[in-house]
Image (tube, rainbow over all chains, first blue to last red):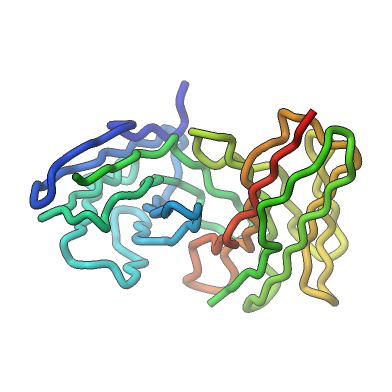
Length: 113
Length: 114
């Protein structure tokens, strides 16, 4: 069973389009995250939700909007896609406690053309 | 918030060579410390962790010791294999009330050649 699954794995789209990436975890975790990994492999936190409530919202354009319908799901919607949005987006989840690690999905490689 | 300084790569080693990847951090309190590994085309996987000072995390021949005095968590392996080729990330965990996220270093790409 996949612990953290995100879809799609690859997404190629044109500039100006709107797209969504879905994430689901079956670990019973309370906290979920979206990270963006650039071409140099640098990982930057974008958002974090705890029990469906937004707790981290880093400096991200407001074209990016997370939605958590329940604590097992955290989707990422992106409006008006730009070339600079091309990256790999990772979903992760954790218990959200001090000594616990995060579990990552396989990533979604977004290419904006 | 927490921050991490990780040895810059890329690092290229011959098979069976000794590996060290340096990691130092700044953090509020004493967070757990993690090393994650990312194999090509995959997501991040937990490699090892240590939850308190002087703890040694180990897995697949890799080791790292939580050094509170030097705020370091260097990754070592005595004899690397081609299959260890990947990107390695050091990350202090959440620390303090209201803190939920891991903070990642910039990653160190390791290439092991036969």
